[in-house]
Length: 384
Image (tube, rainbow, N blue to C red):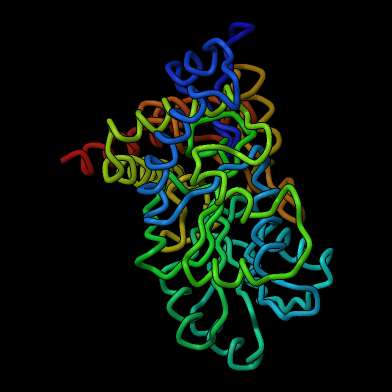
């Protein structure tokens, strides 16, 4: 490999389009000047279709975890009851945040690799009638599961008066999201995944019924106060110093989204998911999740006859290909391939080809080209 050639195929951060990099390299502008007002006026409208909402999408200079904490501290008070759907490491993060704020937290624990069951959620809500908010992870990055958010939202609203709050960090922009139509009350995401930017921006949208709760919530908050951000966004401004260069990049990233079209973007991600999954099926290497529950933005592979870490090391050293490992109790048991944002079917074909060579190097015999051929056939079938 060449020293400066890196193939980043993890579920975030993800590669940045060259035009977005150039946009971020523009000369600095004043964050309280007219140029910034014009920039915010443009991006705040372009963000709404990605969330599937007519509501404001707030922009924070912060990480995805700050977005999760923002969702908690603005909607729930200490001692109130919430239910967290835990399908992996990031569902657990929601519980940790709630615990820090002394919120009474009930957990719906789902085996890692499986999706939440709407019927089980309904039963839990019936058992706990005082739930004020239900927290869920749309794409559980640690397991590559896409939870049935639309169906879960229906259950929440049928069985309770609770808000339904969704972590969409690793899939918003890469999978269909209809916040208003599905009844999602708060949706958050970060910039470094399907949004095709470096880390450093968080995006948060809330429904009208969520805003009623947020406005009345006496819980103390300052930097994370959604009310401040909403008020300033209506003035095409920010309450605190924004990440100017990231916002310039955001404008270009959103332009790319418009040019490709959201439906085409969602279909591309579905295609990359299917190409990746069919490749490993052809290689007879098990996947962690079922086809039904698989995310379009990341795939988790759980081999039984070779060490995932050995494969990750060899493809990194020989080809500069970075794959993600497992988290917590899945560490050393799985590897994960990110295929979101600035990623195409051509990238998937390259990754599968490299993995096949890596498998040969670590002593796992595969017929070279088997996975690539399956991915190619999937592409041709879906391309039509």
